[in-house]
Image 1: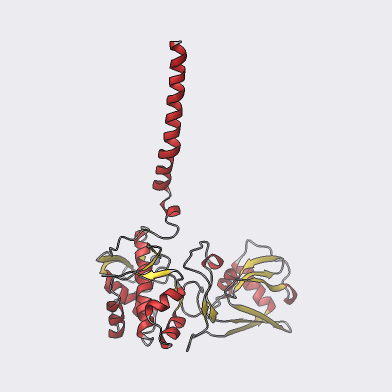
Image 2: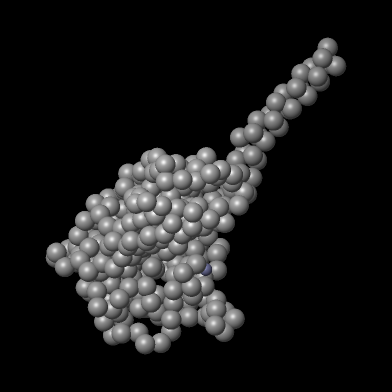
Length: 311
Ligand SMILES: [Zn+2]
């Protein structure tokens, strides 16, 4: 009897240990090892902003410690023309501050190039300084969490993109919205003409791992478009590739592209400049000129977000 109850006790002990492992240890390890998954909608935000940031200065091949708000000034001055409306500059300041904080919280290092955000330390117009100071410490929040992927780009030529149609991740605040008012936008319509054989060479050179077969004007087609109107899937010869791959292979301003053919020539027409996700900078300027303030602009381009109270 005693022996039997020992076995029973051992079973109960094994059961309890198994349950502890399943319900406590494994979730704990999952959180420790894969925090990114849980941070899908952004890192939690406790209202604090670091006083300084470490930025890799490419020219000096060294890291510099820069006061955070001074860094934001240098980014806004580099990323948006100072001639833009003050409200657009303020929107840019909040977006850039949020994006930088997101990278810091994710443990990434900031550099001064387009890889992160372009930054310069000198020639900061006073208009930019004032716009940054007016939003000091303010960041974009989505459901109380940092909207860490506060992406932006130059111009959309009509509509922005869902993030999952351009990059791998989908974020509730990076969805396709109207951006039809972009006065003075550069690269509204870019036209590139070349022979079909040169076009085929460029594509094949950029994607040597794919066998395109014989490429002719009859088998170059845009097969599907994203909600924002950009080329999603493009047929080239025997292959289907993404609009983004075509953009990088040909160095196009955007994936909002159209093809037309005449004789042995192909003409590629593109609209807008940049990846199309998040805030259109020319769109922000357009909304500002229509009387919208920076909070309205940010709420439009980053749906469901709000600006924190700041410092
Ligand atoms: Zn970088």
